[in-house]
Length: 200
Image (cartoon, rainbow, N blue to C red; front, side):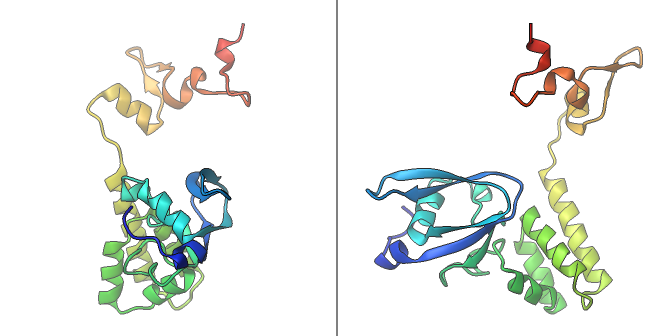
């Protein structure tokens, strides 16, 4: 494990808010100390001990897939070890307001460290409701979101796969739409999880 678990870690109950569209798994400890996976979904607050969070984070290999630091979970009540320096994407609303009102130099430095689309969306939402935020600063936020999305975009040299990923209809040699991507009826499933194409 990344760090030593103390008695305080076992007793401190953290509160986080799930704010991303994705579902995330966290580890909770049962009465006998057995690990139980819990799925966090929908916009809601949840509690987790510091020990359980540390166990969960220890199992995540890629930091970008760690909801506690990639901005998917917003901290509400956390220990002092969770702060803007150690966790730049997991910002509270108050911390976001402070960043939005910071000097140009500090604001630019913060934007370099924030690499979560979810956190940037929250910053834009808060800025939209703050009359003191300049249009210039608001545009900088939007540009940072666009550049981040560009970095995450999947590219391919295969033209048919590129059409599929774009969500645009795939045109055949005769100019007619062929079944591919979103237009492919085999990709549409019913509520039962089965495609209607496979029914007898």
